[in-house]
Length: 329
Image 1: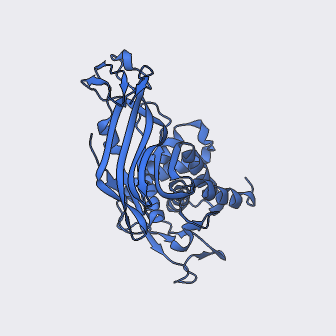
Image 2: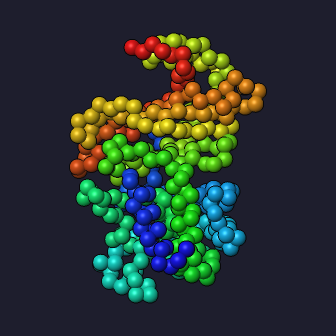
Image 3: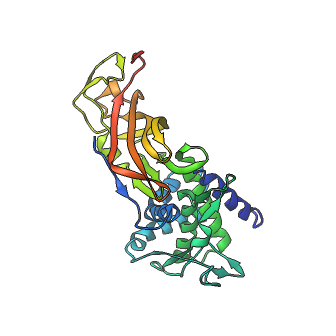
């Protein structure tokens, strides 16, 4: 990739990447807006996403890039032990702080593992075609962080680290499904990151206003392969599912908004998606079955002009809805 084309690829990546039972989940980050929290989430998952890329040929890494990315993955164990490894600052308030080689950068860091990564707050929010503010996405944050950690473990050039970051980020983007409630707004949305490894479980993030709730563990704890099912032909009544065992892996796909009752930024929302379970080998009747669905429902209130999640209202549940459920009240 030429040095003239690389900035265009980075700009395009930023544009398309920012288009937007046990209850509850884990909040990501403390304080700051959605861009800051997406960056912090990406930081905590650099090693995971690097591993996803390293495991498949579709990430299209050269041998040198594979070796560098493996070094970045290995370094993250020490990086995550640092105090305040990500710090946000403003070029406008500190002119020259982010100027490198005559250009203002989105981030800068030192040359050792554990060096603080400073992020330019002035460049992590952009305006879309509707003149609305959009935060840096997780995929774009990953590209930035791969670049910065690359400085900690190598003497690779800025251009080489930019290219590596773009490759890993674009690969991740292919594994992400983002479902904004409204196509031109990211005020309420869900993000699902699915591994290319079949025997794995997805990451599920719920974005509400400036909050990010990681639903992954709650999802993992509430999906199951039933031992037996007694069919109930009428929707919305679920089949009676007897017993349950943990699947070896689950795909969560075709995720969309099922219904909502809202007035402005307040309301009740439901996300629905299909599950394809990889059940234990001795449960052949459910091996690869994709008639399971999974619902995530929650309510919001308006606070300071933004939606705010009522965390106590979050509900997550699996249901079995095969083709024979043809009658619906």
